[in-house]
Length: 262
Image (cartoon, rainbow, N blue to C red; front, side):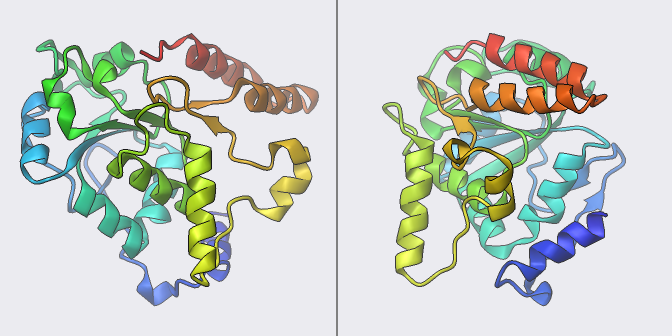
């Protein structure tokens, strides 16, 4: 099934298979490893200083072994050269394990295991991308308090790349609207003659026309969340179909909307 999905993706994009980057390898911890991931001492303040010194922001990437959405991100999004070029030129990436036991020192000086840091920041889903801007070095508090955007879940390639630009271009500031930024970027690229698909037709038919936009919103300072309206509709469909994932989905919904946005 994964092979079929990847083949379908390749057929629906002008990118040729030979233009894709090699598939990443699995590390000893069961997570995919990119050769450009930062290998440091997990002192996050030092990592931010290093990123800032290189003219970049810091991107902290939470994953876990066996995560299908992490695999999709690595085998689809992070094999597209333009996306990887954007990541590498704009961000220094530190990968953390949602269930890991390595010691990490948070920005507030607290040393704790990866899994405890995830709980402290309210990270409950993988992948979750936490964007820490260079200027956050002058802020107070932990990583959650300094984050420009927290992005939970898998985003399609165009949405994923657009989020990278949204943060790197500081468009999140002053209550920046990611959906508007996404639409404006799509319109600009279309005007240049490029093919951009924000919402796939089969999904637009499956959901109501009112939901034909991205089901993500940015409340207050920029912490990304799935909209309650979209998620409630999805849970209702799971309940109607007797899905075994209903209980887990309900727990995720409760945790997402209990998280403080800062």
